[in-house]
Image 1 (tube, helix red, strand yellow):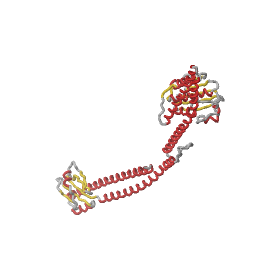
Image 2 (spheres, rainbow, N blue to C red):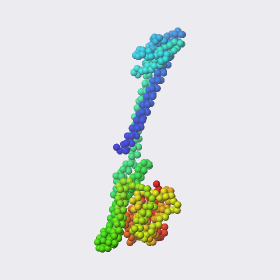
Image 3 (cartoon, rainbow, N blue to C red):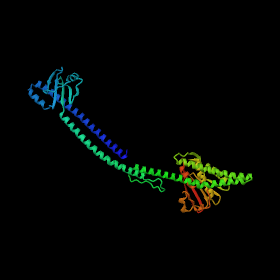
Amino acid sequence: MKIRNKILIYFSSTVVILTAISFTVVYLLFSEYREEEFQQRQKEKVQFTVELMTDYIEMSEDLSRIMDELTIHDFYDEKVLVFDGEKDLIFSSVDDLLIEGYNQILNKLSPTNRWIETKEEDYDVIGIYLERNQKSYYAVSKAYDAFGYSKMYFLRNVLIGIFAGISVIVVFISLGLSNKISKPITALAEKLKKFDMSSENITEIQTETSSYELKNLTEKFNELLKRTNEAFSFQKHTIHHISHELKTPIAVLVSELETLKNHANIEEIKTVLDSQINKAKSLGSIINVLLEISKVESGQEIRKQNIRIDELIFDIIQELKIVYPDFNFELNYFPDEIDEQRLNLQVNEALLRQALKNLMTNCVAYSNNSKAAIKLNCSSPEKLNISLSNSGNPVLKDEEKYLFNHFFRGENSRDKTGFGLGLVLTKRIIKLNSGTITYSNPSDDLNVFELQFLLS
């Protein structure tokens, strides 16, 4: 069912039902009020009748005058029976209306039970016990409230008319509201229907609405769209990375393994094999990293554990020492006295190891003095800053904005060969571990990569 129809049905039915309940309660309350008010009038009539009877007995006035006074309070259709203390009938009104159950009512009346009320069809029947001039009287009255029922019928018809009018108005208002509320949703659905996911330049969806929920929905969709586009882009370019970056080292491995056939010296063969083993391990690490990232891109949650970041960096330094024995990494802490708990990060160790190793390998490749500095800044209780700096040709200012783009190679990378998947993969890994990475060159021959991680 369309949301427009749901709004129309839910809103209009709710208002109509509440209106019907309210009018029904009003009608029932008025009916109850009419009954009680009419019974009180019956009681007053009975009391007045008994008073006239006692006055007549005491004053010996003419009976016709008394009956004339009684007719002043007559109802449209009524019957009054008055009994003495022995429950013998002493007065009956001239109406020929019958009170079928008056004996049962009379038997229930007593000095302790002075009031009984019941109904016979549309007639109100009451029984009452009275005391007048130290004498007891019992009376039963049956009457039809023609005026009261007339008012009830009028009220019923008015309420039904008002209910019908309100129902029609509510339906039209609901229709207008549902169209107004659903219009931006329908517009958003139409835009999504026409949206082309295969386009390279995907633009954000824009909606013209003042509704917070729809704005929030559009923002969340645009975020999802951005992440999906990034995932598709990364997946597409990963294939190019693999073919572009791995084919050269694999070809070198194959070539050097083939040359082993021409070596006769066992020591030379061992040396070449050790070199090939290190290269194969590096390729294996890269492939494992790609597999981990592909799991995350497919929707699996990244596995994280608590690690000491400085211990991980020391491990990477030891690995690189084997391949680059003449290169030196200097690790510094700031401030001098630190809280070691601020060195603990909740990250995926395999992924972060590859990212740091790639950055440190870049320090080796782009350094002009065979050394690099790594600084762990623990001064903030909320975040950990890691900076890697080396002296060498920096990235040009115009090229910095492209540094983390696919296939970008700056002027300073000419005649340089890499063995990793580049800064694009590194940035992706840092982001998956809830971190950020930036590049700067404070001086003409200084390259600085700064990583920032939020502490758990």
